[in-house]
Image (cartoon, rainbow over all chains, first blue to last red; front, side, top):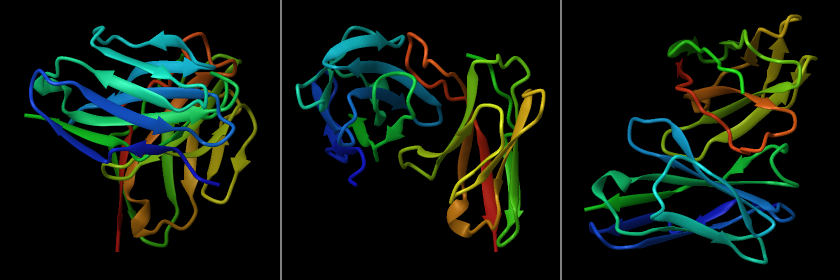
Length: 113
Length: 113
């Protein structure tokens, strides 16, 4: 069974640009979670989508946004990129919402120059 | 969700058992103990979770004390590929309205030849 997949693996942008990161959950999973892991810092929760709806967001500015598609895949958009947005962005999925085990993808490494 | 405390680092000889402790003295009766690990710059990998009873799977064993205030993750025969940061996370059995996992700093396990 395929795990969570993310694309691209690496992304280089310049300050002020927009970045779009993609995530495909494990087949049958309806919840998608996004986390940010900046260099030397822990994993910080960004967003949670379930059944196409945003259920919760972490303490991040509105320029971090996303959506979940009818096939349960998800996009994370980061507008007006700043240098400190450089990080590993991780997507996780789970079945039937918040109480189930989350399984992580390999991540997208975003570098903002 | 309850807070966890883990040693920042541990060493283990290859082939020996690695015992990783976690203190969660404020855990409530409706909270699971989850363990994940993150090998350098990869997505966190789910290992095991438990509520009250000890659990074992193909990767590890989880021993939870009777008062549930602490637990130990056991890797029975550590290999060099087990070198990673191990995270102990306490999480409501209902997931909570927030849905997200709260990662601490974890324990950096170094398996040495």
